[in-house]
Image (cartoon, rainbow, N blue to C red; front, side, top):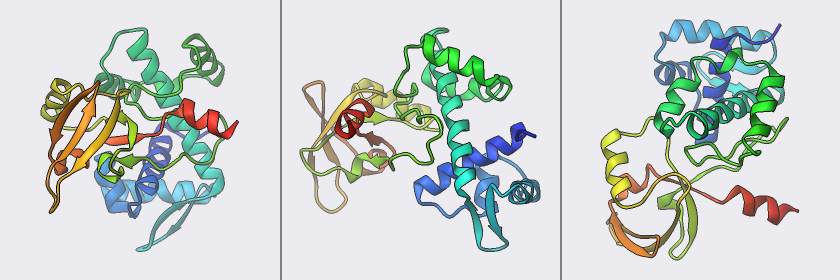
Length: 226
């Protein structure tokens, strides 16, 4: 029996927490999903019974290898559906994230495959995050802009839950998903960062910079591994 919608959302959240380096306790999962802790605990126990997670009360939850593959399959579908909503239907990347959850779990696998092919096998979702390969069990851990070395370049990715005012401000700087950004200068004592976007230098506060992800281009990553 395939996982339910709620179980798939649990798997997705568990993978994202582990990828961020955050301990996946039921309280944190509940906060991310806006659910009661008891509801999350019941869902985690169902996943544990299917050997998709390793659950130890008061010690957190970890995905098993099978659980990781399934979680990434869920994330892959989510990002493909986001791409459909943004590229074909014209939704913003923020709205694509919100709307995809409402129907992505009802899509048959063959339809997902057809959508992916029609879209031209995209490498990233509209946010700028890589679309996992089929049957993969991990993704490269994303860096934040504040993790870059001076002079290093990467591609911008922005999370769906980012403050709309911050998104509007970044848009005025040209900082949007898929744009290449270079860290030019880091001011001492937790000072602002100077970044270059499209040949223009801008100053970004450290707090905001820490919420911007900097992704190595999936195309470059594939070329490097070829």
